Length: 100
Length: 260
Image (cartoon, helix red, strand yellow):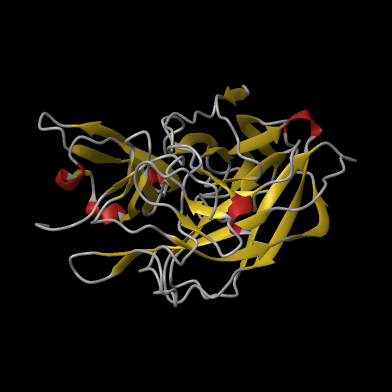
């Protein structure tokens, strides 16, 4: 059913054959919703369990931060936050993070 | 994790990882236009129209919302996420920016994905994945999130310039849209009311889809004078800042038709 030729991985379908997860779909793992309060200040979150991958970030609300992604010398991706001056009145940052 | 499971697609890209949730679509938001039209002095004479709809029950979880958007006009999203503290049944919406008289066919539709554990389905065939802590991460009997393309990075908002993104869109694209805002205010308050604003300008990151092409733009949506109270005794000053990054953002896209 569904008309896939599944050569790798896993596929899921609805009862009418509509594909939901297909092996021809793109990759990309949802990592999480990141909330960081202004009082948490600048800092870095490292993801050793995603070694060898890179992060993709959707900025839902930036609050009083700027952010950047990178990969450290061991191949672990990380997300860094830089807090902005208090005069800008920003609040918590909210990001959705994916890994590819 | 000493035992686990990872699922890759045919291109060897990772789709399921034993530590991470595959969010489940739990409902849609059908919006309607309020019928109101607003003009706050935005660029090109653009006016805006607001669309709102009611969200589903979140089941006590945070959610993220992918939006399917009518073509041909710029959109900014009022709500692309909600925390669990927002009650189900709350209103969520989007704003269209267009020239006066523009006919918009259709209305935004939100696709709500729960960020809480997947609810176990009643299916007797399929696959399920649990985390080490025993929470359900994936159930093939649910409407699992599956990006149309890998969530590609680099989604810039050119300052007042339109940027065309290199994206191949599915039959019915829905987007998880980043939010970026630039604010420039001129203050002309008094010693008693120092925050009185005499002029405000707002730019919002906006997206437009036309004939399968995605464009983004930092859109000047508000440019208006306000009337401060008792102004004059404190020197005016300007504040100009941008909330958050204006480039390097991802733009996840789903084929919403699979979730209808």
